Amino acid sequence: MDLKLNNKYALVCGSTAGIGKATAIALAEEGMHITLIARNENKLKTVLSQLSNPEIHNYIVADFSNPTELKEQVETYIKNNHGFHVLVNNTGGPSGGPIFNASIEAFENAFTQHLKCNHILAQTLVPFMKSAGFGRIINVISTSVKQPLDGLGVSNTIRGAVASWSKTLANELGEFGITVNNVLPGATNTERLNEIIKNKSTKTGKTEAETANTMKSTIPAKRFAKPEELAAAITFLASECAGYINGINLPVDGGRTKSL
Image 1 (cartoon, rainbow, N blue to C red):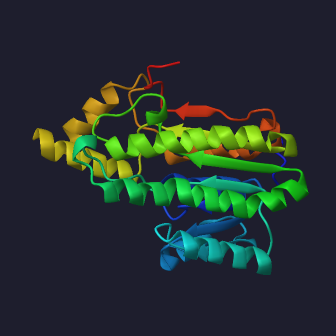
Image 2 (cartoon, one colour):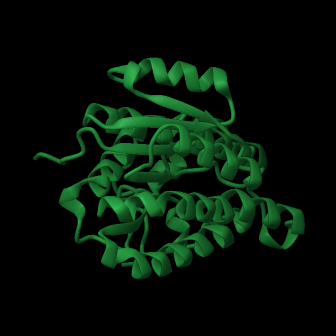
Image 3 (tube, rainbow, N blue to C red):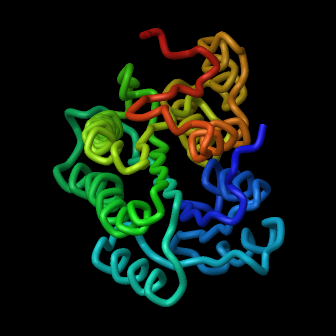
């Protein structure tokens, strides 16, 4: 299948590890020009060197806890380089814990890093997408938007807000050839999952291996996802082939989510 992504431009957030890194690699293999964005320049340089044809790719250093800086960095990059056909919004999840014990600051920080920054990037990139008659905004969020997850109170709340924002934006931008979709990872082999396993292990007194096996037992596939499997779904949604898929929440979770 020809995804028709060759020579298009993509901005991939959180692209120094996990799903973001796998997505950048997958899109580069389809012939896209990738701009990585994250806060650690050394890690950005390392990933850049791992992309196919690294000389055609670039990166932006920005911290998603500072929306003003993010906006300035991306606007400057576009002014001096090019716009983007594809935006992959991907930011590490908030710390876990019961929602009742969560601080107001935790909600504010998560809202800033996820919804505010997603919105800033969409507003900054959409004008070019409109002029090109082609755009893809793909938000990597969580299956919690369909089924809240125990012990992830702040994340459940903010992910739900992002899903509603995304659906509303999809309705507004569809007529311009721009789609907005959400990919919902289940348990995926990333640093984030390792952190969750360690926290659960500490609370239950079980070993990390026992904790991981218990988590796998709740998944029909009986295993965790590979970041590359999420990247494959994102890559398809970024393509011209997915032009009539708009405003959806796509679980990539091995069948774990019980709702339809």
